[in-house]
Length: 384
Ligand code: SF4
Ligand code: SF4
Image 1 (tube, rainbow, N blue to C red):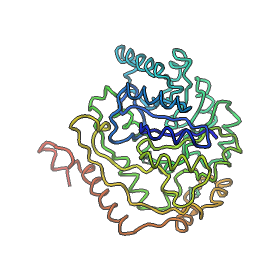
Image 2 (image 1 turned 90 degrees about the vertical axis):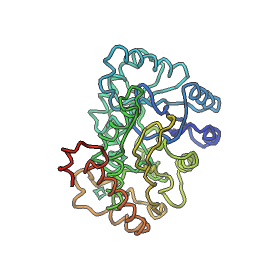
Image 3 (image 1 turned 180 degrees about the vertical axis):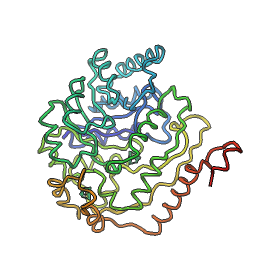
Image 4 (image 1 turned 60 degrees about the vertical axis):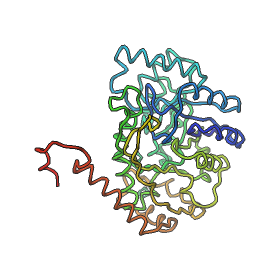
């Protein structure tokens, strides 16, 4: 099994990952970079380029390949500025020189540029590119993608997955442990915000407000069936994807602790997890502050992590069979399958959840009323 595992740059991850029964490859990115990334990274990492170089060398010595993330959804047109373009090429030179084996990209232009000027780098197209149809998969492959991480929303659409497999010959990767809402309405805005905040030329130096995560956390907590609707895949169900020709399995969670990353990688590589599925899912905590809290003197306002749920993984045996015949994209208002499963397999502390909902609502109130910002006196009359 090919397993793509996130790194938070903790050197203690390398040896245990190299011993798993899988062909493990690591992926990661510095907190801020030329192209930026589209996901949350570790909160307090202080990596700089030469440390990353050393880390990639250590990974290689342990037999692990390294994928460097370049997957922000947009560079805000800075790729067309002569000076920034020059820096972009220098950044790609650096990625090549430190021995990265592949890069994960969202911007189509970068696929073509890298293919032409850095042909030794394998190109993975990010899940953020939303490859969710045969037509899109074929186009992305023809641009030069060697590998496509499919849009997580199609994870349980087996008719589509089989059709995409038939249509392209490149490597296909499935994201496994993501707790993003099914058809998340904040997704594009969220990736765009993270992408810009993680770019080295960002005009706010990476300042960022996690409105999207406050919102999606509220949606999940106010309707527990959303936790089941999320398109995660249990370790026990990997074989379903192998049988239809999926090549690689990706674990998300660069912001997770090394312990949790290892726990997830061990579960997926052994195709089995006994106990609480929630412990290997990628849980995101909302944050208001700078994306790179390694900057000297920077204080981030991180809201407490969400309350813990218990998801009985063993009680989910056979859960995936339903999706073989269900069209979730059009059928979700007449179907209560996920609600029934949630009632059966999820346990949580109602009071704790209600308290957390109140905290999130208070944060949201500050944002939607603009109270969080110092606004001019004349504008204040609009605030309620
Ligand atoms: S579910 Fe939350 S973390 Fe996932 S894309 Fe939506 S807003 Fe972002
Ligand atoms: S259509 Fe049914 S199975 Fe699919 S996400 Fe909605 S409730 Fe769940």
